[in-house]
Amino acid sequence: MKGQIGKKFARLNRGRNLGITFAATVATSVSVLAIPAASPASAQTPGPTGVAINSVDATCKHNGRNYIVRQYFRGVQRYTLRCGTTTWGWKHIKLRHGWNSGMDGKINNAIANGAPNGRGGFSIYTNQCPPVEKFRTIIGTPAGLNDVLTAYNVTNLASGGKC
Image 1 (cartoon, one colour):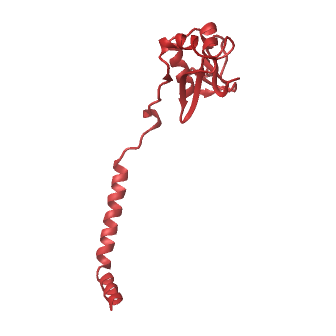
Image 2 (image 1 turned 90 degrees about the horizontal axis):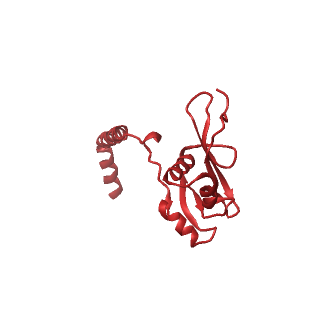
Image 3 (image 1 turned 45 degrees about the vertical axis):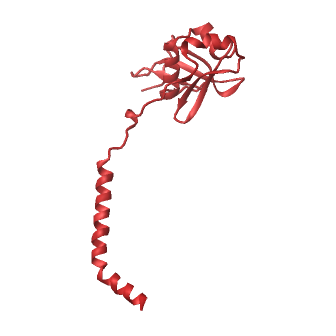
Protein backbone atom coordinates (compact mmCIF):
# COMPACT_ATOMS: atom_id res chain seq x y z
CA MET A 1 0.00 0.00 0.00
CA LYS A 2 2.76 2.38 0.96
CA GLY A 3 4.53 1.85 -2.40
CA GLN A 4 1.32 2.52 -4.33
CA ILE A 5 0.70 5.84 -2.58
CA GLY A 6 4.26 6.89 -3.34
CA LYS A 7 3.84 5.99 -7.04
CA LYS A 8 0.54 7.89 -7.29
CA PHE A 9 2.12 10.93 -5.61
CA ALA A 10 5.05 10.76 -8.01
CA ARG A 11 2.69 10.56 -11.02
CA LEU A 12 0.60 13.47 -9.76
CA ASN A 13 3.62 15.64 -9.11
CA ARG A 14 5.58 14.66 -12.19
CA GLY A 15 4.76 17.87 -14.05
CA ARG A 16 5.46 19.99 -10.98
CA ASN A 17 8.85 18.27 -10.46
CA LEU A 18 9.83 18.97 -14.07
CA GLY A 19 8.92 22.62 -13.58
CA ILE A 20 11.02 22.82 -10.42
CA THR A 21 13.91 21.03 -12.11
CA PHE A 22 13.70 23.38 -15.10
CA ALA A 23 13.56 26.45 -12.85
CA ALA A 24 16.53 25.24 -10.81
CA THR A 25 18.51 24.54 -13.98
CA VAL A 26 17.75 28.00 -15.40
CA ALA A 27 18.64 29.67 -12.09
CA THR A 28 21.92 27.77 -11.93
CA SER A 29 22.74 28.63 -15.54
CA VAL A 30 21.95 32.29 -15.01
CA SER A 31 23.99 32.47 -11.82
CA VAL A 32 26.97 30.86 -13.53
CA LEU A 33 26.73 33.37 -16.37
CA ALA A 34 26.32 36.30 -13.98
CA ILE A 35 29.50 35.55 -12.03
CA PRO A 36 32.53 36.94 -13.86
CA ALA A 37 35.47 34.62 -14.15
CA ALA A 38 38.86 35.88 -13.01
CA SER A 39 41.14 36.60 -15.92
CA PRO A 40 44.87 35.87 -15.85
CA ALA A 41 45.51 39.60 -16.28
CA SER A 42 43.66 40.38 -13.04
CA ALA A 43 45.47 37.69 -11.04
CA GLN A 44 47.80 39.11 -8.42
CA THR A 45 51.38 37.90 -8.44
CA PRO A 46 52.45 37.26 -4.86
CA GLY A 47 55.47 39.27 -3.83
CA PRO A 48 58.67 37.75 -2.54
CA THR A 49 58.74 36.69 1.09
CA GLY A 50 61.50 36.25 3.62
CA VAL A 51 63.98 38.50 5.38
CA ALA A 52 63.40 42.24 4.84
CA ILE A 53 65.43 43.70 1.96
CA ASN A 54 67.54 45.90 4.24
CA SER A 55 68.20 42.99 6.66
CA VAL A 56 69.57 40.42 4.21
CA ASP A 57 73.18 41.58 4.66
CA ALA A 58 73.07 41.26 8.45
CA THR A 59 71.19 37.96 8.22
CA CYS A 60 73.76 36.41 5.88
CA LYS A 61 76.63 37.57 8.11
CA HIS A 62 75.20 35.47 10.92
CA ASN A 63 73.96 32.44 8.99
CA GLY A 64 75.45 29.83 6.69
CA ARG A 65 75.35 29.72 2.91
CA ASN A 66 72.25 27.48 2.85
CA TYR A 67 70.10 29.93 4.83
CA ILE A 68 67.03 31.00 2.81
CA VAL A 69 66.62 34.79 2.76
CA ARG A 70 63.93 35.24 0.07
CA GLN A 71 61.23 33.08 -1.53
CA TYR A 72 59.71 33.69 -4.95
CA PHE A 73 56.73 31.94 -6.54
CA ARG A 74 55.72 30.91 -10.04
CA GLY A 75 52.22 29.62 -9.52
CA VAL A 76 52.54 27.12 -6.69
CA GLN A 77 56.21 26.40 -7.42
CA ARG A 78 58.58 27.96 -4.87
CA TYR A 79 62.06 29.28 -5.73
CA THR A 80 64.47 30.36 -3.03
CA LEU A 81 67.37 32.75 -2.70
CA ARG A 82 69.93 31.53 -0.19
CA CYS A 83 72.80 33.47 1.37
CA GLY A 84 75.12 31.49 -0.88
CA THR A 85 78.76 32.22 -1.66
CA THR A 86 80.68 34.55 -3.95
CA THR A 87 79.79 32.20 -6.85
CA TRP A 88 76.04 31.71 -6.25
CA GLY A 89 73.06 33.05 -4.31
CA TRP A 90 72.59 36.39 -2.56
CA LYS A 91 76.29 37.01 -1.83
CA HIS A 92 77.11 36.48 -5.50
CA ILE A 93 74.31 38.76 -6.70
CA LYS A 94 75.32 41.49 -4.23
CA LEU A 95 79.01 41.28 -5.21
CA ARG A 96 78.62 41.01 -8.98
CA HIS A 97 75.32 42.69 -9.82
CA GLY A 98 74.23 44.79 -6.83
CA TRP A 99 71.39 44.22 -4.39
CA ASN A 100 68.46 46.45 -3.48
CA SER A 101 64.67 46.38 -3.55
CA GLY A 102 64.76 46.97 -7.32
CA MET A 103 66.83 43.83 -7.88
CA ASP A 104 64.52 41.87 -5.57
CA GLY A 105 61.50 43.07 -7.56
CA LYS A 106 63.12 42.16 -10.89
CA ILE A 107 63.91 38.65 -9.64
CA ASN A 108 60.32 38.27 -8.46
CA ASN A 109 58.93 39.53 -11.78
CA ALA A 110 61.19 37.28 -13.86
CA ILE A 111 60.34 34.16 -11.86
CA ALA A 112 56.61 34.90 -11.62
CA ASN A 113 56.01 36.24 -15.15
CA GLY A 114 59.09 35.67 -17.28
CA ALA A 115 59.68 33.21 -20.09
CA PRO A 116 61.88 30.14 -19.59
CA ASN A 117 65.32 31.10 -20.89
CA GLY A 118 66.94 27.74 -21.59
CA ARG A 119 69.42 28.27 -18.75
CA GLY A 120 67.21 26.77 -16.07
CA GLY A 121 65.71 30.14 -15.18
CA PHE A 122 63.37 32.83 -16.41
CA SER A 123 63.92 36.04 -18.35
CA ILE A 124 62.07 39.25 -19.06
CA TYR A 125 62.03 40.32 -22.72
CA THR A 126 61.01 43.58 -24.38
CA ASN A 127 57.67 43.71 -26.14
CA GLN A 128 59.08 44.31 -29.63
CA CYS A 129 59.99 42.27 -32.66
CA PRO A 130 62.31 40.51 -32.24
CA PRO A 131 62.09 40.49 -28.44
CA VAL A 132 65.27 41.51 -26.61
CA GLU A 133 66.22 39.95 -23.28
CA LYS A 134 66.43 42.60 -20.53
CA PHE A 135 66.75 40.61 -17.27
CA ARG A 136 67.79 37.02 -16.57
CA THR A 137 67.65 34.61 -13.65
CA ILE A 138 69.47 31.30 -13.56
CA ILE A 139 68.10 28.62 -11.26
CA GLY A 140 69.96 25.72 -9.66
CA THR A 141 72.73 25.80 -7.06
CA PRO A 142 74.78 23.26 -5.11
CA ALA A 143 72.22 23.71 -2.30
CA GLY A 144 69.06 23.07 -4.35
CA LEU A 145 67.53 22.74 -7.80
CA ASN A 146 65.00 25.55 -7.20
CA ASP A 147 67.50 28.06 -5.82
CA VAL A 148 68.45 31.29 -7.54
CA LEU A 149 72.05 30.92 -8.72
CA THR A 150 72.27 34.46 -10.11
CA ALA A 151 70.18 37.27 -11.53
CA TYR A 152 71.25 40.25 -13.59
CA ASN A 153 70.36 42.89 -16.16
CA VAL A 154 71.27 41.74 -19.66
CA THR A 155 73.34 44.43 -21.36
CA ASN A 156 74.11 42.75 -24.68
CA LEU A 157 71.45 42.73 -27.37
CA ALA A 158 70.55 39.05 -27.17
CA SER A 159 67.47 38.41 -29.24
CA GLY A 160 64.64 36.21 -27.95
CA GLY A 161 64.02 34.70 -31.40
CA LYS A 162 62.48 35.47 -34.77
CA CYS A 163 59.21 37.23 -35.38
